[in-house]
Length: 237
Image (cartoon, rainbow, N blue to C red; front, side):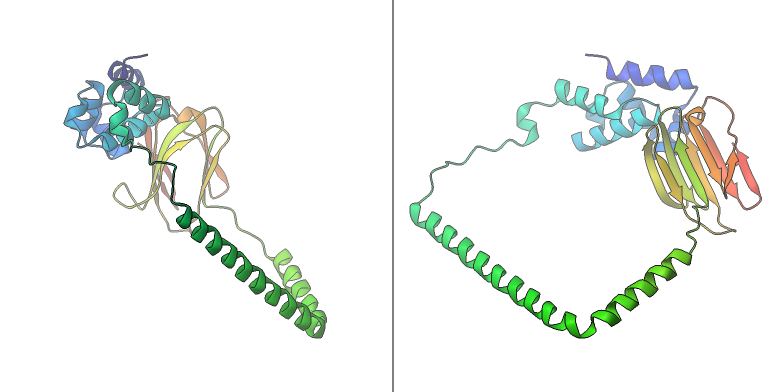
């Protein structure tokens, strides 16, 4: 057992993050983040929000979000709150059971008949146009082999450890493309053309490799950082 609130607060202070920065990155209102650190969970709208906010905030701080959700459930959620329902009696009328079994048999027979008709029809037509079909498939295969698949314009890979990342198209208020934790060894690609801008928030830049248009971008510092990616370059802060 560990203190949920104190652990979150220590991680935030250790990273030098204030509530305004955390609110911008996680999209969780500052008063709710304070409530999580003070373990005043009754200030949040519902337990569902508590679990979601706990997971998001912990992962933003580089912690194991599931561990905090499990700790909250074990300490603050009783068995009745999970919505346990009384078990129904296993005894059922014999007539209803027989009707169900008969229905299952009829459905199975119908499925077998349909599959048989499909197979017979396919076998009868395959002989007439087999050569043409093979030629078409081969032509399409050669065509696909000549097509070059372009690489993603923006690629974010966790190489040294995990990191919380959020990616918006255009700017911080633009379309949200990704929000969550990128685990070590995982690559997240984002497509785009020249002229497209991205806004990227990163909690642990030291764990990531960021590639823009096939060029590796160097991100300095051990604190959360915001990156503006434009056709003219990458701007930090």
